[in-house]
Amino acid sequence: MFKKYNDTPAAIAMGLITIAMIFWVGLFFFSPESALSDHGMDVSAAPVVRLVALTWLGLLVGIILTFVNGPDGQKVFFNTLLVAQIATAILNWYQYFANDVGTPTDVIADAVMTVLLLFAYFRLRSRL
Image (cartoon, helix red, strand yellow):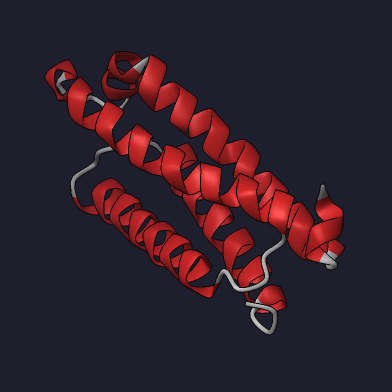
């Protein structure tokens, strides 16, 4: 599965991102109420959380397809994924520090995922 990448460190980074996305998509789709209550938010926002989970599910499928078909020629997809991840990390940091919403674990997890994605992106950008 990682052979299509021809770059083991980048493939491992993308594999870790895939595992994290599977966790978050599953959490937000199957139990948005608990995710919202853990962050001190009203559970009436559960439909919006499920919508976001399905959006990230689409990105997750795209990542899985890069493992199957290789990352070659997927520049637009990787740019989209990078913008979405950086925007998510910035929003998470802002919400945590400005509004006291969220947990330090969320902020750290987003930062780690962003660093892993940037690492993989810069290792693969010549093939994209």
